[in-house]
Image 1 (cartoon, one colour):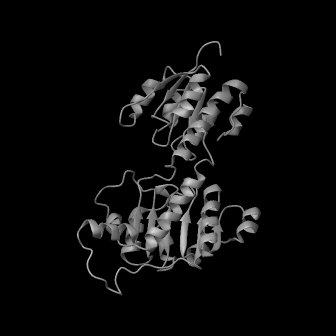
Image 2: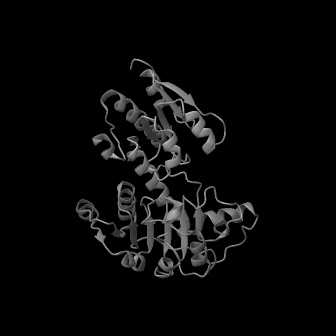
Image 3: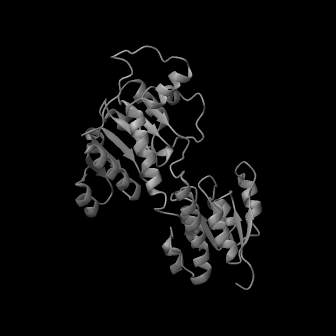
Length: 329
C-alpha cells in the first residue's frame, strides 16, 4: 500500500486481529469508550476511513452507507450480519466480510447448556439458595425432566445446528429432526436426521433449538401460533437472534403451559429489562448473548475479521464474503 489505509474499529476487539492489521501497515482508529457509538458518532468517524471493522451492535443501514460510499470494505466481527444492509452495500460496491465457523463450538455449547439448565430448572433453583429458600427435602418438589431419548428439532441446520445435534445425539441418544429450505444429505447421513415441515418440527420436537439467520422469512417465526402447535412438555432454545421469536408470545406460552420451558441466549430487545417475567420463571434459563464467549472463539473471530481486510487489499478478494456478487461488478 502506498499510503496506510485507515480502519475504523468500533469496539475493543481481541488484540490478536488488531496486531495482524498493524503489522501489515494499516492505521487503526479504535473506539475505546465503555459504550457503543451512537449512529451519528459512527457516521462522523467513518467519514475519513477507508475500512470499517464493526459488529452486530453497529447499525450500518442504507442511509449510513449512502453517506459512506467511500468505504472500500466492511469487515463484520460476527457470523451474523443483520445489522448491515447487505443489498445497499452491494449496490454501492462495498464488500462485506464476516467470521463464520470459529464460534460454532462455543455457541453449540451454550445451546446445549441452556437445554440442560432449563430441563432441570437450574437458574431458578440457584436463586432459591441466594434467597435463603433452600429448605428440607420434598420428594415431589423442584422436579425437572430427563433428556435421554428425547426428540431434538433444529430450526436452521447449519454449522452450529449440526454441532448442537451431534452433542444431543451423542450424549442423550436423541432423534434429530430439522427444518431447512434445502435438505442436507451429508448431515442426514451423519446424524440419521430427518428433514420435516415446519409444522411437523413444532409438533414432534421435545427440544426445539433455533440456529437460523435473522431474515424477513424467519423474523417472528416463533409466535403464538407456533407455540400452540408445540408439545406442552417442549423446551424452546434460541441462541441465534432474539427477533426470531416473539417474546410476548413466548411469555404467554410459558405462562399458560403451552410449552414447558425455554433457554435463551438472545432476546428482543437486547439488553433485556430486569423485570422481564422470563427471568423469574422456573423452567427458563436466560444468558446475556454470550454464545461466542470463549477466548478461543473471540480470538478466532478477530483473526478472521483481520484476514478479510488484509486479503482484500492484497488480492481484491475476501476469504469470508457475505456478498460475492459485489466482486463481479
